[in-house]
Image 1 (cartoon, rainbow, N blue to C red):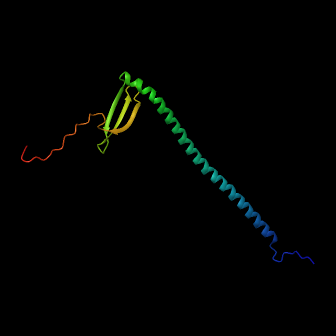
Image 2: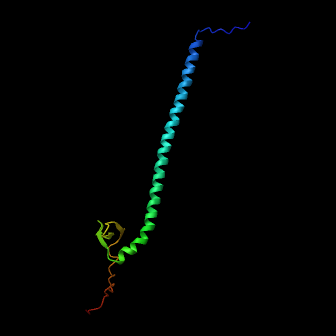
Image 3: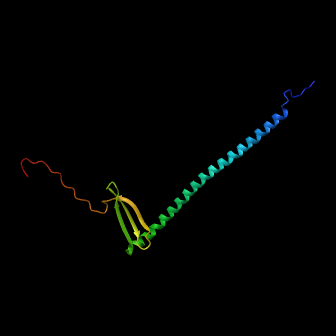
Length: 130
């Protein structure tokens, strides 16, 4: 005798609960997929933008080397040197007077353009002499 009766009477209820669980799991998997896709695309966009800007800066630097010699030959440039807060280093800027674009922008020692002072000999001790 084969008896397959549901003694608790919850056969249809458990199928409905299982169906809701499966639907909820599918929905959570769908939401998790889109969260991961959005986060990944954000990082891909940030990385791509930084690589693009780096490439633009490199190309601009290579092109800037060619035009800097032409600007300095006819006296169209100005130079500004400002000391930084430590007093040892200066901020040097060379700009084009006509377009007001910076041709060179760097930080260097403040005494790089000045001649070095001669070192004095250290005084030696002498007995009674001046």
